[in-house]
Length: 97
Image (cartoon, rainbow, N blue to C red; front, side, top):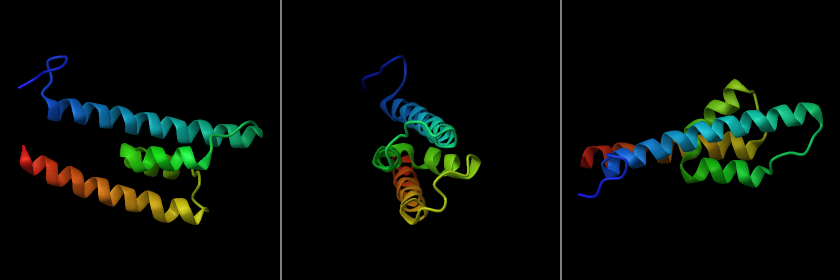
């Protein structure tokens, strides 16, 4: 089986997802910081796309820790739905390995 950086494909996917979630968490914090300062903001679409494509856990954690986007219905419903979906997918794929 092919390896990259000495990692099996499943391990590489896990590392990439952890990095994506960490990045998403930081981006939510940066957007909150910019919101407080009245500066240019990260578009909501970008924040939701990060959550949808693998960064849902980081987005959810960012919403709680930074108290960011918690009053927006779209975020209150979509981000937890993405967490649930990605959690189910992770459970399914972990059972395969």
